[in-house]
Image (cartoon, rainbow, N blue to C red; front, side, top):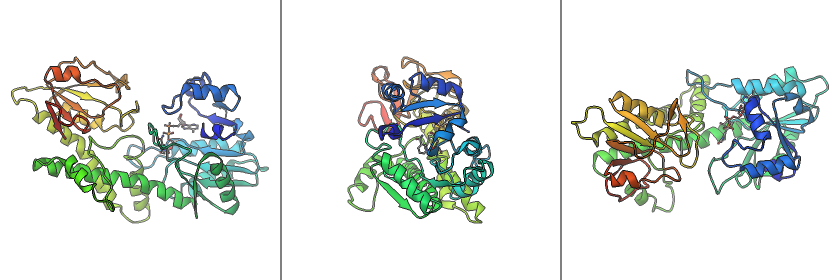
Length: 391
Ligand SMILES: NC(=O)c1ccc[n+]([C@@H]2O[C@H](COP(=O)([O-])OP(=O)(O)OC[C@H]3O[C@@H](n4cnc5c(N)ncnc54)[C@H](O)[C@@H]3O)[C@@H](O)[C@H]2O)c1
């Protein structure tokens, strides 16, 4: 949509046919893009979706933005990326720019994508240009978007860089040129690893403060009064989404491939995964020990407020720990109707304790408070309310 707004004609290729049909029907699958915006782009002929990779032939710029998840060994899974490169390669026209926007470890463009395209492109497509411009979008963010977030661009040679800069300058307010795609790839991993380690630090710090009866939020506010050298991060159930818990493991894997170890990052990852267990125990401790199988209501299961996305949500581990402690667990999330084969319950579900994991817009706790239900607040949004215990 940012490219459409800048005057480009855009074709979206996706191998998930149902999504393509939905998009072409004017229904947006992306929270930050309204149906009206999508419909306007479609009706003026500036956008359409297709499953047909031959549409690539018409493109002067191709951006690859497929998922880069972890496999069952929690290592980079580049299956989608390789398959997208194989899908577009035979249809790439001469003088086309290919940009990888997917998050991955340094060397992905040069060592994975380019060899696939070079092998499968047609003989006539002699000049194909390559760059990397990692996606930085923050879903649900009403301030920072594609246009006003500076874009990193690193290309494999001068002509590729000139073309990539021209493209991103047309859709973004600011573009930051770096010397190579590997720098852009590494910068993206650094950005998200920075968030992981700082969130892990504050989650560890929260546990230390709680043991000593100190309110961690007051400590964070106090530290944040220093005008330089400190940035506040807040505790929670853990990290979620398909970026913060995932991308740092691309970094740890890449370090191992190069004979090193990212010990600090590995440690942050394990602290993150311990947090849901800690939260589960804190909630159970709020229930009278005479109740053998306490009923626990989790409020919010999405990975962050304002979205219905449950990918890698730490609430999954929270629920598993609660179950292993003998609890009966139900959950409520106005933005997530179904999750892992179960449905969101109403707030009148009778529980012994509630855990506010994610504060979603439209959540109304009035009836829980009227019933005197104890709430463990992991979000610091119910400060000072009766019956509420901060994390
Ligand atoms: N969404 C974000 O907030 C965000 C932010 C920063 C970076 N990223 C990065 O951007 C990349 C994409 O993330 P996303 O959240 O948009 O992913 P997504 O899960 O929304 O997937 C994008 C689409 O790719 C399609 N797809 C998968 N394989 C394909 C193939 N071979 N050919 C064609 N289509 C294919 C899927 O069907 C899906 O519709 C990832 O590397 C992610 O780390 C995303």
